Length: 359
Image (cartoon, rainbow, N blue to C red; front, side, top):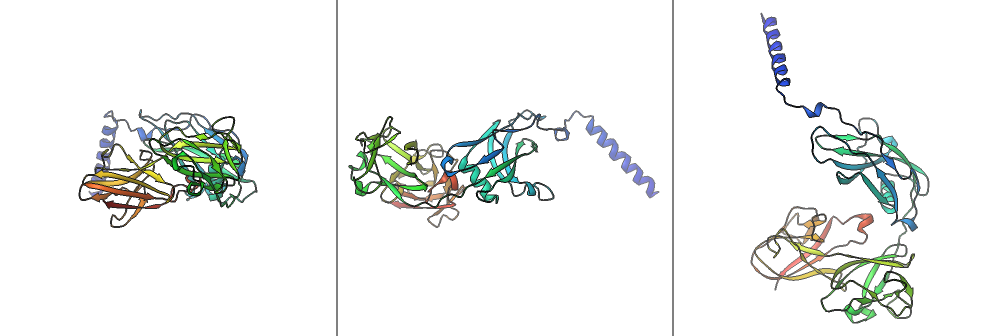
C-alpha cells in the first residue's frame, strides 16, 4: 500500500510541475546566454616602463551580450594568472575592474596594468603571462573566453622630493609656497585653492628660491626654463595639479573635498566645498550647520566618500555609510586631512581624519 501511495505522490508532483510549465511564465534563467563573438585586445604583448606609466597601453573591447530580459547589462574585466583559472578555486584571486552599464571597452594606462601584474605576482622585468576575460551581468553572470597576455612589468621607483608653486594666491613668496610631492620619477602632484579675487598666475621652482624656475613656454601647459611668462589657472576654485619634469608639461583638474548631509545647506544633494590650506595640507571650511548628519565626499559625487565607522572618534573610513551627528545648529570649522599621495596608482587610503569644532 505504501508503494502505491508513493507512486501517486510522484505522479501528482509531475502534474503540478507540468501545469506550472504551461502557465506561460518565462523561466529566463534556463535560457542559454553567451558572448556572440570573442573579445579583442589592442596588444597581447606589452613591455611596461615608468616613462609610459600615464599612457594608455591596453584597450580591451567586446561585443554586446543579449539577455532574455531587456535591461541594462553591467560589464567588468578580470585579470588572473593562468594557473589560477581552473579547478575549484578558479578566478577567485582575479583582479576585477568594474567597467559600467552597457560599456563595451576598457582602456588601461601603463601604471594601472603594471599594478595589476605586480599584485598578481608577475616578476619584475621578466615577461610573464596573464589572462583577461570579460564578465557580463544581469539576471546572472556569464564570461567571455579568456585571452592570454604577455606582460613585462617594471618596478616603480621610490621617489622623494618636492617642487614649489609660488604665485599670486600667496604673494609670490617662494618660502611659503605650496609644495608638490613626487609621486613618480620626475612627476609631482599637489593641491591648490585660489580664493575669489586672487590672481591665477604662478611659477614652478625646484628649490625654495629663485635660482632656477619654470614659466610658461609655447602654451600655458608647457614648461620653459627661466621663462618670465606665468602659468595661469582657470580662476577661483580648488585644483589638483600635476607636473611632469620628464616631458616638461603640467596639467590641472578641478578637485575639492566637501561636506555633505542634512546638517549642510545642500542636504544630501550638493556638497559644501572645502578649501585647501597648502601650509597645513588640510582641507577646511567654516560653515553654518543645522542639527543633522555630516560626512565627506570628493568633487560633489559619491564615487569617493568617507564616513565614520565610530562617530565617537575623528577617524573616518573610505566608503563607510556612517555620518557624524551635529547636535546643535551653529557656525562650525570643519577640517579634513588625508594622505592621498598617488590615488591613480595606490587608490585612496582606508582612513582619513577630521575635526568638527563649533565657533
